[in-house]
Image 1 (cartoon, rainbow, N blue to C red):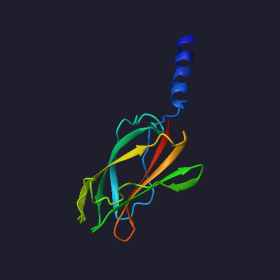
Image 2: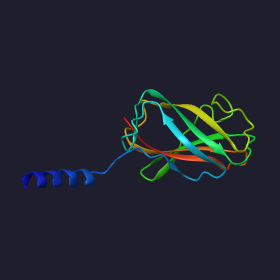
Image 3: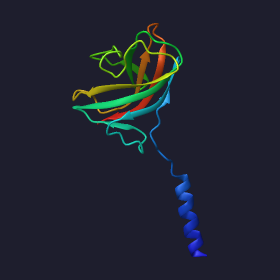
Image 4: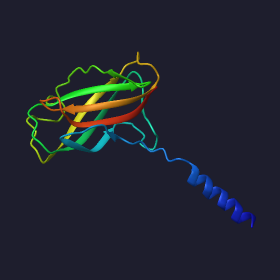
Length: 151
């Protein structure tokens, strides 16, 4: 009876423990759909992607496109304590140096790649990164939310 009780407690504890796998959330994609997000060095078994200060992070977004896009720009925001703060990019033109060559054709799949500098001056906080690829009409092709923590 003791062995069964111990096993039952163990199984109950395992079921009650929350699984904290990292989830990338769609935040309003209109003309496309992301199929995969890869962040170099990110442990996807954690609930947040750890971004170390004074480093550069490489990542990619695979997506499919339902409509043609003649131009694509990148817009990035970080949400800290419920406030969206724009993140200035060195190269917001996603058609240059990102693996995309515009125009993008509908019913095709693409891989967007980028690097993100995590500056030493950034505070050590949890942040919800909102990464958007917008078309020539400022409509989100894809919008991905990435839970992260700056350390």
